[in-house]
Length: 199
Image 1 (cartoon, rainbow, N blue to C red):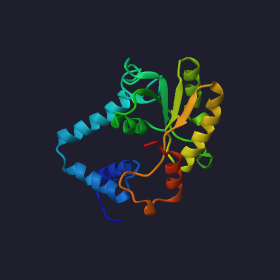
Image 2: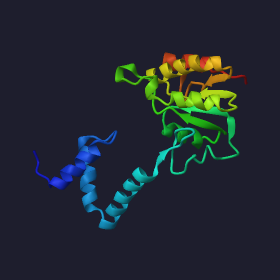
Image 3: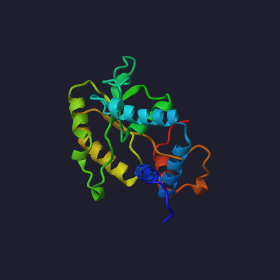
């Protein structure tokens, strides 16, 4: 084993716990911190602590926020009759970047995954149902990932929500722009056909 300072090993260990950061990358990051100016390291540490101290979940939609309710829920120009259900706060960011959706969101905090021990009680489904019972929501858009867990969650929610007599839709799935048909997989082509629109 190559000898390095204990503090570098400790920092490297902390970095390696972050998603997508392997052991080598964690070590590189730790060594980069050594090269940084002390003020930069203090600013980085302060930013990490600030995120932990200030950021919380919106009591309405469960998105991450510093103000409660979050800026989207408190925006009077947003259409509160349409709720887009997503898995994670990162999905809200992705949809907001499109500037196409003017409704509000509900963040589940994950997707159903029985193999990983994630059931309906582990997601914010109860909060969604409570929210729907106290509001004038007309449409629920299920915008979940197209993986096995996302599909299972979409199916579960659609069965749960349909008896509430509101419109339940899901985002269309299809071909990315610039993709040749011959390289698309069968599931993507099938969804592209299902989600076809009039021209």
